[in-house]
Image 1 (cartoon, rainbow, N blue to C red):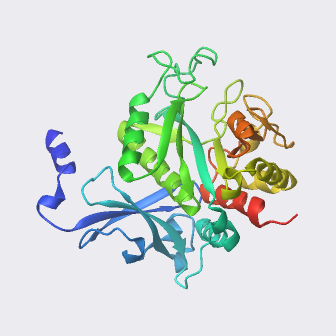
Image 2 (image 1 turned 180 degrees about the vertical axis):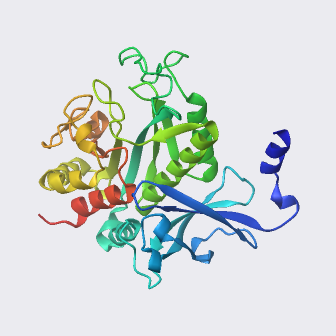
Length: 356
């Protein structure tokens, strides 16, 4: 095993200029991350300088067997925390050979929205709070829970410390550092209300980069849990009953909201979100109805509400934003399994472009 570890940790820069690029994309379910590696002649820092590639879409549920080729377009580059050196992770989106985005490519439409002059002028900032649950691999039961049983009630686990309250911290800290190494603007981590559940935050990130960073952070988490022999789930309600669900609260501001007088802009934006509540809920993650019950720090899925410092509302405005008269707000409706390309671009489209 020591020899295997030595080989995995080989520093290629001592013997070759060649690098390994791990191409990452989203599979047919919309949540299954896929990746494969290729050798490149030397270091690359610009995605447009990377070659396009292809894969068998019939094996990912994205193309028929008789015409299975799907083309990968490199879109964003991150340092590879697993291979280190000059090796890279490459976030891609997916196209037909004719150059059309395939139906599961949500990035292409998001890029159109973010390149709209009205949107780009407002420099939309996002902070995504990604919750997730760690499961024991052979039982799919949360990490730290007694097999076939339940831990004590919620209360001591949120930001908790101690072997009886915190489960999986080594995985979480490894992920935190790996994301910083990769160049992801991960801004924090914490233990969540349900034991075995954690959260990381990505942001502030501008426009389309928020989606790229969240997806690559998810990829890195999947890889680390693979190494640890643990399963990560982004299900919005992994355990039924009196346990918190998992969300992806999305914090948002525009230049107008961050400037003096921004509080009125925020209230106008929230009113627009209220008018399109059903459309947003439909795009905010599968199974979200199991989470948005009006309990466990959520608003009821059928009713839009907002409030200052209210974690039981659809949209929360921070006390500091109210006091300063400018700042950001938090859309608390997105589920943990939401597509960040969809959610971030939809919030921008509704609040900036859409005219009721």
